[in-house]
Length: 375
Image (tube, rainbow, N blue to C red):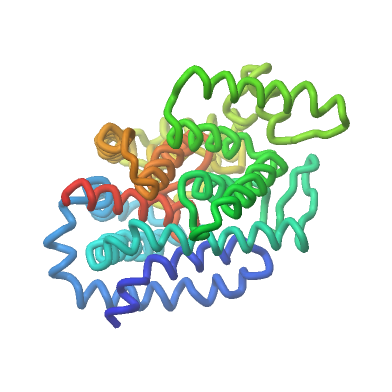
């Protein structure tokens, strides 16, 4: 049981990734519930460790407390399908994150990154060679369920290969796969993933004039020179269209309006955890907001959601200013994951999920950085 506890978080992440990769989805389903059950047992066994160290992880502990305080203060009158399952699953995932990091901090600092990157490289390469297809508007999926999922995994792998060399003694291997992943990001057409790639470059090399000029030259080449040769990178084209039109929220105004409508319906007590759109909101849009912060405000109400967001902002700012000049390549990667995810939450529903790769990798990196902050 001790080994399962130590590597639970890594196994859970692999299951999350499998859920998003079409041919591996059945394996992802097999991972999820058994790992949650094992997680509950492990929490019971390691409760002393959890209680002794939970205060190091401010945002994680705040999330757990707010989930349960909200549910028993306001949420009993706002119970929806999946509410209780989510509460148990999310709490288990967060507690197991703390326990796993406390038990094996060095593993998740470095070795975890290498194995995660190697697994992702295999999936992306296989997707490019065997499972690729161009879906809506020519956006490629590389074997994933949708282009945004493909783009997010590709940009995480790109950043990892940029900052870390998982192939010992073969740096050119890492650079080759880094370029493959960057091309994959651009072919998926994910604007947020393209922006995350730029963030990764700045975190790796810092902000300086030479780098800005180099990025400008690359951007001009991609938008002017390559199209004249008949080469089109849909990610760059969609990003350029968004900037030129001033539409930086990905044509999702109606989804945002529907979420704001629900926030205004119940501004104090919220609409409940995992709440579906109300009848009035459905008249505006039947889709989710694609914005983590609006989702929290919709679920928890303005007071508790604002408190949760405040904890997140404080934690991330403290971590950023502590590590942004670090020379530790693994810490740079974890920092990229945290910073880019928090920014991407304005455009996607990250962090609040359970069986999602973006959620698990975010909390893993956040916990690693919080743990090392105390060492």
